[in-house]
Structure formats: C-alpha cells, structure tokens
Length: 98
Image: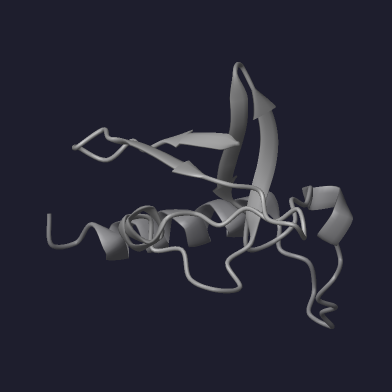
C-alpha cells in the first residue's frame, strides 16, 4: 500500500492501493486540488520514507551551447556596444511609466 500525505490545508492523510496492473491512482480530491488531469506527466523521485511526485517540466533542460546558432541569420553580427544599446533601450521602454 502507498500512503500519500497531502499538502493541502486540511492536511488529511490519503491512501491508495497498487492495482493488479501495478498502477497507482491518486485520490480525486488530491488530483483536483493539484489540477492533475488524465495525461499529466509527473516526475517520480525516491524520498525519505516514500515517493515524491512532481509535475514534469514542459521542455527538456537545455544549455546555451545546445542551441547556439539554431536560428541562422544573414545579418551582420551585432557589436557589444550595439547589444548594450539595445538592452538599455528596452529597459527604458519597459520602465518608462515608472
């Protein structure tokens, strides 16, 4: 048997049973509070005294070097000064109403 402790304000203890197909069903109230519907992907981690289920990230983790150059451009590369000016212009635009 798997015991799931809810972190909802009521902090009630919920239980479920591993099925003959070795599946675990999360109780309806918990799924609704956590907005977990059919097809929701969860990561599974072993934790002290149990198992931790967390929403799976929508995208796989990437590093800048994994995607560098992914969008080709025919334009001349910007200089550091041009990039700095662009960042400053956007910051001023975003904070003009402050």
